[in-house]
Length: 191
Image 1 (cartoon, rainbow, N blue to C red):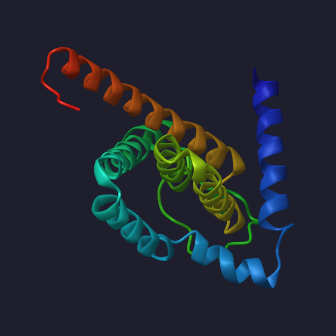
Image 2: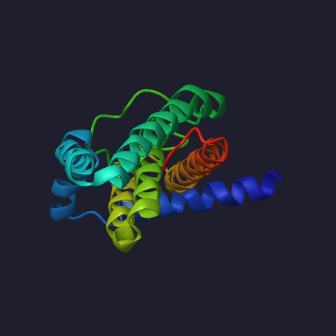
């Protein structure tokens, strides 16, 4: 088991180095700190939720509610449960050769909250608007990659984050569907 852990750790550090240092160039040095920032994405989220609520009909309002619920649950589970349990030190603290492009955040590294939240969001939107799946997952991919590029997460933090976010979204969607079916059978839900 320790050999497997050592192998995975070596792969994680090598991949981190290839992305964080090996991909360095002035254009990405300028773009990635913006892409990794909530301030950059906030207008897209506000406009998207506004569109779902005002123009998306009943389907859009359900999707907006699921987005808020899912991202909220995913973020709480990540930051209040998983990160404190795992307690992994961030690469910007642990590695002397890291190229740090934003201030090193406090708190544990595993999993990446950004990756969890973006995968949860992408999963909910994919389930509701399948035709645009590539847009939702491209955004999640770029944000995840940005976390490694700026030096604050290992690749495994991001990969696990995507899996956890998607899993939470699928679980909540399953609960929603089963609850709606139960309420319809009891004639407590009319749609």
